[in-house]
Image 1 (cartoon, rainbow, N blue to C red):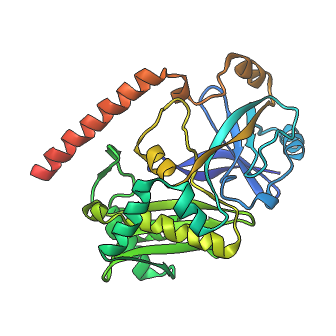
Image 2 (image 1 turned 90 degrees about the horizontal axis):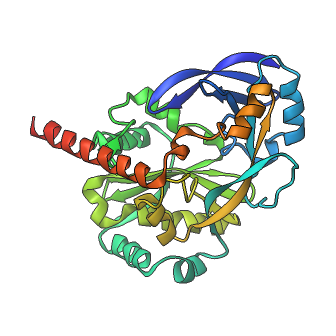
Image 3 (image 1 turned 135 degrees about the vertical axis):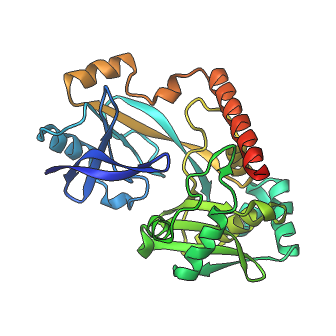
Length: 317
């Protein structure tokens, strides 16, 4: 066991977080008053490489550099609680995949079917691409279109080539990179990370200029086809619901494209006295989740208006 720090990305910045290496995984910790630890990139690691939770807890207890609380979530399709620790329900957005035809005819909305057909009629083609310099620079052209996306600052705007290449190159050996093209121009891309029975979308984004051509729908359609070809049973896209945030445009996009909510057990295990007290008081949760939903939505709308006005000022200079 090695106590150390580990570089993570938060809000577009690289920071060194306290961490401890346990075999093949790294537990990173965050928090000012209560340190909460979690396996770094647990969502992206292969499910069969994750340690047993009991073993993880025992190992952390044996090291001096341990968090106050460690959290661990089971992976799709393992939805039934397997441990006796305190747990709360987390969730993931998942498409149960059997055949492409079933997904297209029965699982998505009529609007999504129209958008997929519209994308084809308007000349958008999707293909699997090698992860090379040309593709990375295509990603950069998408990133650099606007400094603001979805009403907030876009952290990838004007990043240098080396950073874009490194960030999108993670888990390359079991990833597929898709490009949505209008003639020879990359107008959208998707990265899929494969596991044995599931696949997860790490990134899907397209140029705002061409959103009327529905490249994201074309990319999603191609991803489901690949899942069928590989015999993958679930296509995942992070959470369907984020705490008490409520439904937004991304949630609606997921639902219209066949994603459903799958609830997963998330465990919280106190490892120190402070951790036990924090768990009793509910201080193990993200601060944002403690803000009432209505107030949080008002704050989000205020933020969106502020960035929209800022973009107008930038555009006018």
